[in-house]
Length: 81
Image (cartoon, rainbow, N blue to C red; front, side, top):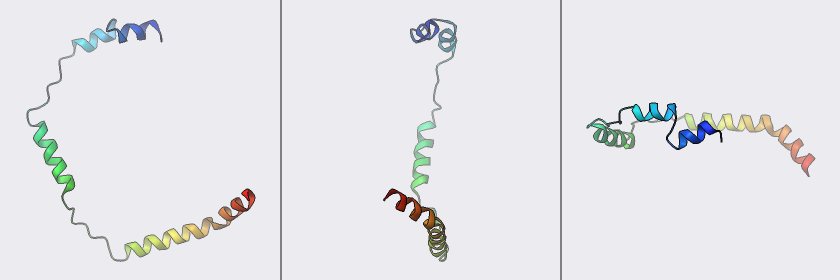
């Protein structure tokens, strides 16, 4: 480490002095209730119902991608064997 880094870690130097001069962070009084409310909201059911055809469309796209990659995959596996 450099001498400046050592001084900073030791709490000396201009950057350490600037940091010490900053006022202490005081969390807003309502921070905890707001965080807890956000956590509760995140666990609440979202009411999203996926379209019935979504699973079929995803599986069809996965099969298409798998088929498109099959020649390269097979060639690589044959080369490794």
